Structure formats: C-alpha cells, structure tokens
Image (tube, rainbow, N blue to C red; front, side, top):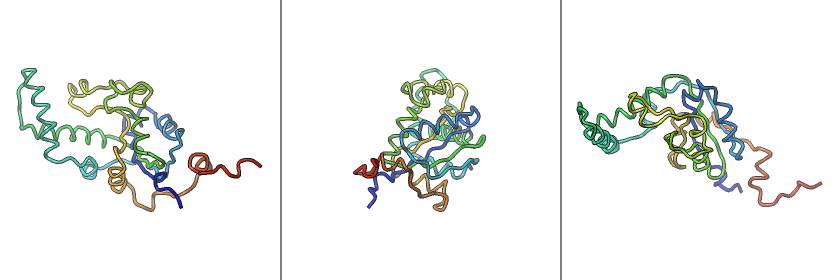
Length: 201
C-alpha cells in the first residue's frame, strides 16, 4: 500500500513575469531537483472569474487589508477616497490584472510535504525580504512599497499553495482529473521505498 503522504500535491503557477523573463526552466529545475514529481503542466492564460474563486477572500479579509491601507494613507496625510473594503478589493484587482496580463505555466507537483517544500523553495511573498537562496530572493527585487506606489501587484514570479486542503481546492479550479498523470519515477524507490532491495546485483 502506498503511503498517502508521498501523494501530497501542490499547485504551482509561474506568473507572467516569470514567463516574460525566461525563468521557467530555472524555476522548474529548482522544484524538480528536491525530488518532487510534476504530474500536470500547461501553458495558459488565466481568466478573471476563476481567479476570484482561486484567491477565495471574503469581505472580512478585504475590510482588514483595506483598513491597513487606510491607516497608512492617513499617516501620510493622503486623501481617503473610498471605503476601506474597496482598498482591500484593490489588492485582488491589481493581482488579477497582473495574472491575466499574459501566459502563465500552471503545474501540479506531487511528493512528501509538497506544499511546504514548494513554499520553502519559493520564499516569502515579498521578494525584497524573502530569504536568500529562495526563488523570489534570487530572481527579482520587487517590494510591497514599490508596487504600492505604482498601484500594481507585487511581481514575485510564482504562486504556490499554502497547505494541502488549499492545494486540492486550487487544483480542482485549474485542472481536470484526466489532465493529472499517475506514474512512477525510478527515483521514487530511492526517496520512498522502505528497503532498497534490488540496487545491488
């Protein structure tokens, strides 16, 4: 019987900036070399309606984030032009505008601790403060401050699921079950088999 832990999946989306900067191969290599297996992959243009479902935020989230923005604006002496909730929704509007601006590479990776491992490789959401050695720290220098001044989403190259339940929900939005391939890699034996029987002749 296969241990279900080794079948954990994560959704990974290489965003338009990763595609435009020709970083697909580099990012795929970094995910693949830890031993995670790609079980689905497609180059596509995302649609706005599904992205709102994908990000799955409610009014409480918009109100909280918008409240933070309003407080920052007040501290800077800026004019507040709309309710806090609308500033919160602007965060997603900017992100969705960015995510629909060009092709993305959507992928499903599978393996033990897939969501946590991918998140560790990708790094913190803000490239400027992400840990050295992560994809976001190594390949871009964008920041919340700069994207805020420009009125756009932060360009951080990669989306990845935060936890297994979120991954399954996101995967169902972007992939049909028949697009996910079940197969075994030779390296699976080294990574997961209890005994390494059969290596020596």
